[in-house]
Length: 180
Image 1 (tube, rainbow, N blue to C red):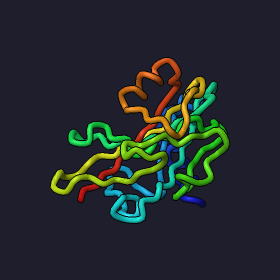
Image 2 (image 1 turned 90 degrees about the vertical axis):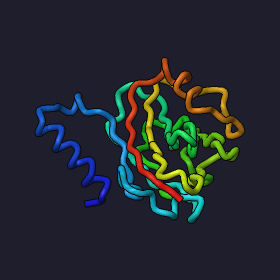
Image 3 (image 1 turned 60 degrees about the vertical axis):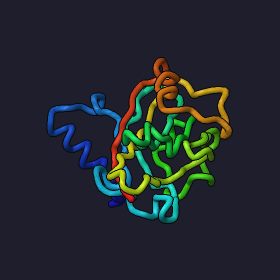
């Protein structure tokens, strides 16, 4: 069985053993590339190959018209540094392959500029001596897509939350860490 299938089978089994039903499942996000709460492998950082990690999700709520995927450094020094923001993924998509950034995203999906000023994924590059930084990977399920944006646009984390306020159906996150 594929690791992705094993993970979600385990999550479903845990939920059902606790008395939950399929209708009560909450959205989940995971990665085969990066384990939650673990150190991010160097190949996903700017000190390595700077490639985007594989991500997958499950249990998208009914009524979802678009998905957003983000990676944000929440360390106080980073001040919610955007490492990756992909908007308007179709709800039929349940994963992004490793190293997909800048390549074969599903039709309609857009990679916005990251805090480095370039569209697409920009891996961790925390300043030396600042300790571990926490990187939060999130998938958002929206009632409608974000409109009027293209790869030249940058949305700070605070503004993103404002934009999602009336569109958000559900979200799921996990975090991992990295330090130089």
